[in-house]
Image (tube, rainbow, N blue to C red; front, side):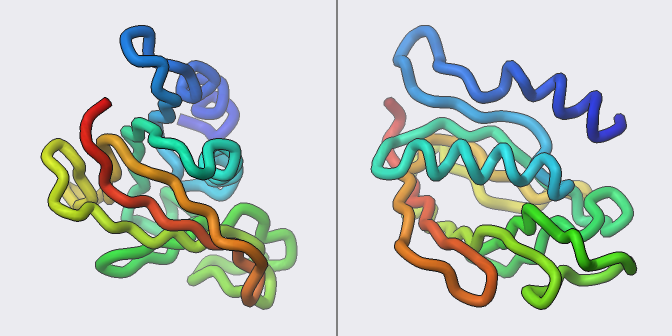
Length: 147
């Protein structure tokens, strides 16, 4: 699916669930064009519990310049204007958001890897941190009880 089609399909992703009015975001966030919408959603809901059902593929050709990750964090690069060659994103060329993931053992909260993609699912408390460091804003997603 091309980015434009995926973006159009994600128009419905940032909605409110009818039963609980919990802000919800779902879909792929792997390409930096998609990461920008996800990043904006999280910062728009700072201090709130949101429901996420998102993933990003592990393959660079599936998500060029988009994601760096570790065991308890990932970075979404949302603007890589100067980087033209494939490879790891760099703060020298890119702007983005660093996301610290703290599942905290909450039932139904998933931060994991399965069959070539990383998944983030469940209810999460969003906490934004002030300022930018090396081209990145930062926030923490903490596992939250089901709403």
